[in-house]
Length: 167
Picture (cartoon, rainbow, N blue to C red):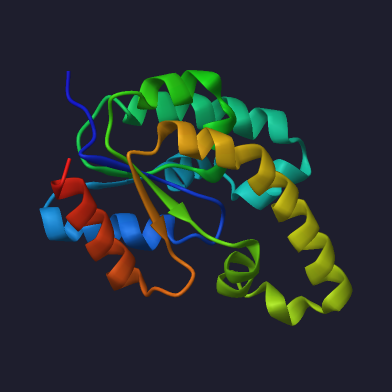
């Protein structure tokens, strides 16, 4: 059975996709984007699926996540996949990099600062709650932790590769 070289986890806006792509290029291995695979299977962007109900998205997200954790490459895990106990169990024994990011940085990276103060506050409050819920899950599976707030994608990717080589 083949397993991923690395799994990258974190909240939306932490840089999972960009960092996973950079590490995959450096290592010469495939990039596996769980969000893209889930959207392809559902035939619609996540936002559209969520509008009609989050449960359908989460079921497919869990199934796809469990499948990709059985193949090689660098996996950018979908943010919500960490909520699944089955996914967390499947991550045991794998090299998992948690891109620890503040909500303020994440919303800025996602371009949400231009939405107006009221919308930004509501989004940040929701993301704060999600981070409070998910941080213990990320911490429980992470073998590498990189604080990303003041780092570029290249610097984060280099830190992940360096810390991974130490294991």
